[in-house]
Amino acid sequence: MSGDRLYRDSAVVMRNYKLGEADRIVVLLTARHGKVRAVAKGVRKSGSKFGSRLELMSHARLLLYRGRDLDIVSQAESIEPLAPMLSSLERASQGIAVLEAADLMSTERDVNRGLYDLVVRALRTIAVRPGPVVVPAFYWKLLAAEGFRPVIDRCVRCGEAGPLVAFDVGEGGTLCRNCRSGVPISEAALALLGDVLGGRLLDALDAPETPATHELATLATSSLEHHVERRLKAAAVFERA
Ligand SMILES: [Zn+2]
Image (cartoon, rainbow, N blue to C red; front, side):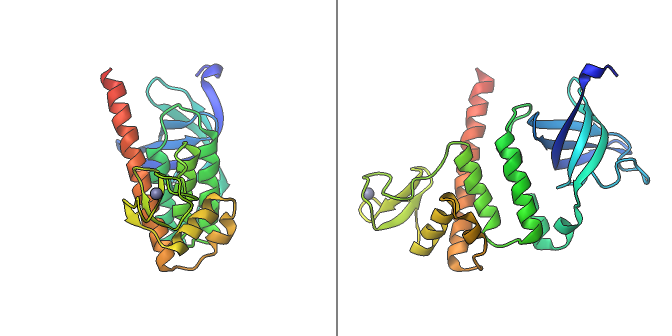
């Protein structure tokens, strides 16, 4: 192995699947190299040198060898324990939701430090307090970071300050009574969304489960789906060109 093809980076394991008898392919979100697909050799054998450091949701410091299609994981050292994430079904499913969204919104070898930081922060929050707002807040932050910050302080169509009664994913924000389209939004859900996007995230994360947190979650999921679909369509056009 030549030295210039070796590199170190920190990464979260977003996905992994079996390869042959003993190996595994891991899809990593790295801090400095974007999304990377790599082979972890012998990882499924008992007594593997990797231990559990390349399981789904693991956060590890890695030594990687750059390959032509897939890189190869040479060393892995744990940054934080995985055990808290696996301590409840709620934590595990929230962690997986964060990773699936990050995987959909990332491109191979496309460096995105902001996304990596956002994912690491979300997983750490889930490990200590997996409230009903953590995953939707992550989706909104992710969308805002990608340039899809919704308009929530006026009607996105006519500019009227309020009252704002609906949210239209396609329009990218809230709507007044006259212009309403999309889905209805309650005042409480709009206030939560304002907290999430307006620098009062910590207050929002403490919110107990209410109809408003459900609304926030449903809206976050449909917004993310809308943008992922647009991304996939844009990528398809790009590939045909
Ligand atoms: Zn309007």
